[in-house]
Amino acid sequence: MTVHTSRLILPATDRELSRQTGWVRGHWEALADHLLDSLVPYFSPGSARVVLPGRPSRSGTASDELEGFARSFMLAAFRIGGVRGEGCEQLIERYARGVANGANPDHPESWLRLTPRSQQMVEAAAIAVALHESREWIWDRLDTRAQEHVAEWLGGFIGSTTHDNNWRLFQVVSEQFLASVGAPYSQDDIDGGLDRIEDWYVGDGWYSDGDGQNFDNYIGWAMHLYPGLWARMAAATPGAQYEDRLKVYRERLALFLEDAVHLVGNDGAPVYQGRSLTYRMAAAAPYWMGALLDSTPLSPGQTRRLCSGIARHFVQHGVPDERGLLTLGWYDTFLPTTQQYSGPGSPYWASKGFIGLLLPPEHPVWSEPEDSIPLDDEDQVRAMPAPGWIVHNSRHDQLVRLVNHGADHAPLTEPEGVEPAGDAHYNRFAYSNHAGPELADHVPAIDNLICLIDQEGRTSTRGRIRRLGIGARTASSWHKAWLGTEGPWPIETTSVIYGNWEIRVSLVEGPAGALVRSGGYAVAGSSLPEATASSEGAVWASTRNSEGLMSAVVGLHGYTSAGVHRGLGANAFGPHSATPYLTAPHTGEPAVLVHAVLLTRDALAPQALAEGIDVAVDGREITITLPGGDTEFVMLGNR
Image 1 (cartoon, rainbow, N blue to C red):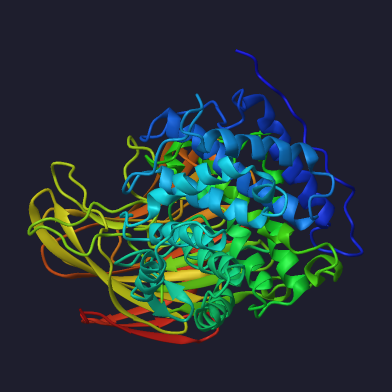
Image 2: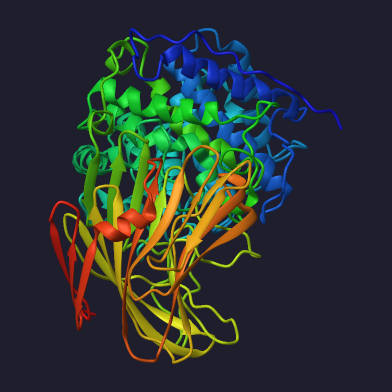
């Protein structure tokens, strides 16, 4: 098999216009061109499919090949539209040919027809968006028969059924495109989809992606992105009524961005939490959309600072690979980051992160100097009640820490006697931009969890998160712990944020003879992280990777022993990983346990932290005296 190699060549950094990142529009165009050019050897003869190497998705290779075409077409459309087609002749010809052949039911490379809840619905929406944004250079140049074929193919959405989540918006944008070109469509489908997302709006600019507590990156690159794209299509549709909805979407996006600015480190690394993380640069999409819709609290220079930081971060970590391809993983190939619906073309949803290219070169986001984001200037702590998070970030070591008491991706209903198993991308107490959960099936779930372990080795997990409250620096929730079919035992936890530290206070119920285990962050790297643990005097454990990132847990009350668990091939941030943890025997009576959780690059001795924090327990009232004399009170038993 021929292996194609392709080297990314970027312009020189520009520290005058972009003093933090050095990136300007030329870097974005070069990266987009590199990604698109690197796909050329993988195009089918008729250009309607992109046949990429890699693990196929559950939808099959025909769907995967459509996916490679559709998602890269969105990137091509942003590239073409942003320069009004200038210098993009080969790109225009390639994708116009692919659209004409793929939509033609008689062509050997014809695309799969749209059927209810099929993966091709996702890709159809990408094609509809791409056709709209490149309308003048591709759609308008297709002959009448080709346009009819496209309309017939997209018409598979009319009256059909999608999954009841962000997929409703795929139907909305696809049928709005049909309306904009005078083809058959259903206004009821469009209105129904837009009305449905109102049921998922939870305030402060946040949506859940469907029913439940589904909060993650998808909110920015789906629930905010597609309504904005729909409005752009509706504006091109004679007689369409869209102004009232657009006003609402603009207000919500601006609110969302006030939170979202804190989900990226000052080195450009986005927080690793939620599903479909292999889309990588798509994390930049909501910031660009804020500029496109003129609905952002960020200055033009802040927008480019954030977005360029994200793209540069992944490039510096080997994305795309030596072939110029986006692989299934985070930095390198790492399949546990993905889902069953992920195929070789899935990572090209990174195209969403390039939507800023639609803004012309003279737009302020490209022409004005970069501005500082909040984390460039000082450490940040921000409570986000809608998703149930507190995010606390440190400027000097570029770390984002997301404390989670609200996002679980669990179904609304559950059978009696069972709890949702818990998804590692949602059920942890904390996430970061430089540390991720252990994901391999052969590795026990330890990191950022508190669980029961019985004498048979059965281990509880955290499934549905039941919120108790969130304040400026504290957040509380509880969950049910099951050991097989035995239980449930409630575990209630309050997180107290103090600077770069998190103190977890838990009330744990469980059977006598069980062991309680609490884990910290898993850190990973290319070599084996150093590890130390002590159960004499102060109870603590720590591990540090080769880049100086340290994870530590320090027992402050109730814990009796400590250890470090090592993983191999279990973490998106490197093949070697390690997780510190604490344990305590359970007597069968409700137990109060308190520990500190650290993720830092500081040279902080865990035992010093144990000596510097005083914890007093009076029944279920806990008083925490912090260094400098600050005091926090926690009352447990609130469920």
